[in-house]
Image (cartoon, rainbow, N blue to C red; front, top):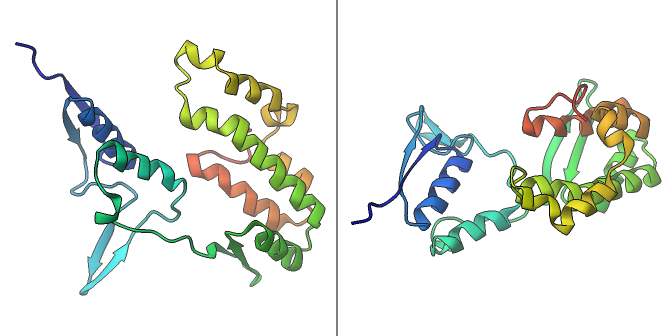
Length: 206
């Protein structure tokens, strides 16, 4: 008799839970270990004085992957939660009182930085266009492919990524790139913070 294969997942954060679901769908007997008293990692909430507070996530990006996970598990996502894109993703506050609305709409966001920080519309358009191209051709390689598999490197998206690479992407820090592109240090600081999404230091990470 064939025994059901077993799998162990360390951590019940979003990545751990998603991995456990995918393994279970493949027919494995999955055990998830979590040091906290609750699952979810950053996606959690707490209660105090009769009120409930969401502790995260601060941003919900790439919802298509969550939808794909529910489809894989043959579970209707609408039975669990729904989401709506908000006009302002987040807000930035500076010590001198400057307040920046990070609009989800690209043109509105560019207008905000032009009006309040004095940045050039052309400089913003160039930066955002380049960022989009980097994400489409390089970022998706890291997000949707297993880099430890040799067959990944013979797929066409990898060569598109290589063709997109430029010297500053590899040998300049994110801060150096941003400081060379924008005139206002607040704008530089704003775009520097995106390195922290994966725990990187913008003054050291390319």
